[in-house]
Image (cartoon, rainbow, N blue to C red; front, side):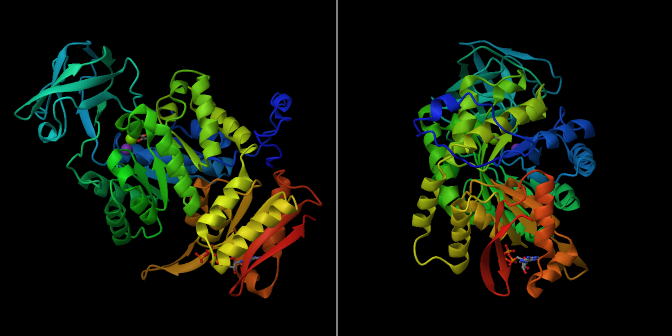
Length: 524
Ligand SMILES: Nc1ncnc2c1ncn2[C@@H]1O[C@H](COP(=O)(O)OP(=O)(O)OP(=O)(O)O)[C@@H](O)[C@H]1O
Ligand SMILES: CC(=O)C(=O)O
Ligand SMILES: [K+]
Ligand SMILES: [Mg+2]
C-alpha cells in the first residue's frame, strides 16, 4: 500500500531497506509514458505494457507515417478494451528536427580524426565522407568549434552508434567537421543535433500540421508533446491551431530540448499544460554538469504551479539489457524524489528488446522512491509559493490533503469534470492514491451534442497519484440532490481492487452547489 511511513532521513531506515516491496497489483503513483513503435505495436504486447503499468502511449511523428501510427493506435484501443484499462494518447511532433536519411540502410563507418562534410544537397548518398541533411542553412548557423551530434534516433551521445563532430570550417552551404569518435551509424534515419544553435525552422512544421489535422483529429488525441518548444508563442500558436481543428481540449505539453527553451522556461510554463524535460536533446545541448540543475529547477517550478513534469531518457541501457545500470536505477528514483509526475520511455519501448520489463522495472523503482518521498516539505513549499490569500478552492483542496494525512486515509476521492479539481489535489502530492471520479458533461460543438469526460479522465493519467474513473451518467445528476450513490460505487470499486478495506477512511473532495466541500467517510 502507498503511504510513505519512513523517510530516507530516518535513522531506523537502513535494515528496512531489505524488506521486500509490497507493490501488489496497484501501479506506481508516478506515471509511465511508453513510446509505441516496431517492438510495441501488437495487441498482445500493448496489453502487457498496460498491465505492466504504462498509462500514456506516445506516438512519435519523427518516425514513419500516419498509416503506421493509425494501425498502432487501433491496436492500442483494442488492447485497452481487452484489459479494461484507460490509456492516454500522446502525439509527439517532429518539429525542427535535423535528419539524415540513409535510404540504403547500409551502415556508415566514421573514424576518429577523419573529416566529414555535411551538405544540404540531399541528392548525395550518405557515406564516410559526406552526410546530406534536410536543412539548407546549417552553414550559416554554425561556426568553427561548434559541436554537432549525429546518431540513430534517440541516441545517447556516448555510444559507438553515434558520433560527436567538431565544426572546422564552412564552405558555401557545406560544413566540414572533424570526427571526434569512431562510430558505426546504422539504420535509415539519423538525428542531427547542433549544440546551442538556433535552427531557423518553425516549431510546428507543415508536416506536423498535416499529421495533427488528419491523425490527431481522427483519434481525438489527449495530449500533444510539442517538440523543441523554444518560446511561449510556440505553445500559443499550437493552441490556436488545435482550436481551429476542433481539438480545443487537447492538452499541450511543451518539450524543452535546447537552451533556448530553457531560457524561456517560465513563459513557456505559463502557457503549457505540462512540461517534458527532453533530456535526450537537452542532455547534449547543455554541458553535462548542468543537466541535473535544469532537471531540479524545472521539476520544482512545475510542482509549484501544479503542472505535470515528465522526465525522458532514464533507462537507455534497457534497450538491449534486462537490467538497468546502477546509475540509471538511481536516476529514476531521484527523478521521483525531485517530484516528477511521469517517466517517458523512448528507445526502451520503441525498439528495445524488453519493453514490458523496462516498464515494470521503472514502475518498481518509482514505487519504492514514492514511499520515502518527503511530502511534508513539498506541501510546505507549495503553500508558501501560492501565498495568501489562497483561492477558496485551493485552500479547501490543500486542507483535504492535510486531513487525509492526519486521519491516515487510504484514498482521496475527488469529483471533477474538467480534471482541474483532481489536479489541484494532486498538486499537494498526497501520499495516498487519488481517485478522480470524472463526471461527464453535455457539450455541443454547434453541430452535435456530445458527452465530454472520457478525454478528461485519460488526461488524469499523466498526473502523479491520480487514478481516473469515468462515472456513469446517473452520477452526474445525483450530486446536487445530496445523493451519494456515485461515492458508494467508487468505494466499492476501490475495495474490489484492493485499494481500501472495510473501516478504512476516505477523504472526499467535491463541489456541492457552488461550495467546495471536504468530508471524511468510513469505507463500509
Ligand atoms: N457525490 C457526488 N456524486 C456525483 N457527482 C458529484 C458528487 N460530488 C460532486 N459531484 C459533481 O462533480 C462535478 C465536479 O466538477 P467541477 O466542474 O465542479 O470540477 P472541475 O471540473 O474539476 O473544475 P472546473 O469545472 O472548475 O474546471 C460537479 O458537477 C459536481 O456536481
Ligand atoms: C524524448 C526526446 O525527444 C528527448 O529526450 O530528447
Ligand atoms: K519527435
Ligand atoms: Mg528530443
